[in-house]
Image 1 (cartoon, rainbow, N blue to C red):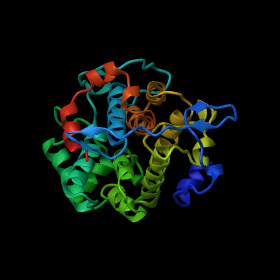
Image 2 (cartoon, rainbow, N blue to C red):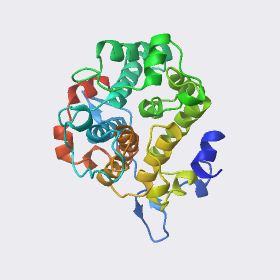
Image 3 (spheres, rainbow, N blue to C red):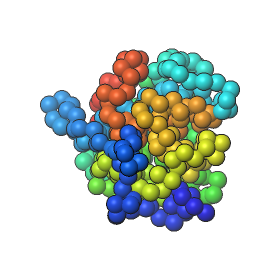
Image 4 (tube, rainbow, N blue to C red):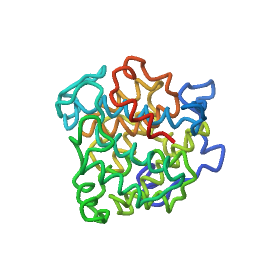
Length: 305
């Protein structure tokens, strides 16, 4: 077992040395990848957490790009732009449960100023039961998530390791959340160690990107052939696929299109990849026509902290 699978199975990797610190998207003469963290953004007269808006818009745009193609096998389509309808019959620019649950997470942090898994769960119930944090109502959700919100207990079996907590965990990278708190937020719906560890690792990765770095396990994905990347709903596969798209592309646009074109769970793979790329490249790097077409921007703005 090597690379990302080992990292997930064991514990969240910590970036401690120069060898573990890569640099971002544009190769320099020594072959490193240089990352420049996005500058802080301003909302309603105050400064938000650095790159939070970049991350959330990156996630939402990736989600909306993937929605029309969800469940379609790799190689049966080519996504080159934002379109509508398709799998779920939604208008162009519509995002799914990935963004809705991410916004609910943000809104809880905005209201309370700290991590509260119970409050987040209440907001998730408001989403799935009443269509809160949606544009036109709920049209897509995972079985593990639905059962967990109905029973009040996150799925803890081996088969409960879909990507339903990974897809919404990115906001915690912009807080001082501990590994225990990250696990608790994952466990609202996905309580198995595989899922909670994946969330811890992703938050650590997001924080590394904001510091201008990539851990060694991500760099190991550089130039891994696409045929070795799986894009179904298993949480480890999604984390690996999103990271692969990020490290093997040179722009926000290329990253999220690569994620969608992996097929299958297109919206979530692109949402997770989009959170990474939005954070790294910034909001201005997202094609303006995609931002203009994205629906629900007022709701997004209301939930940022």
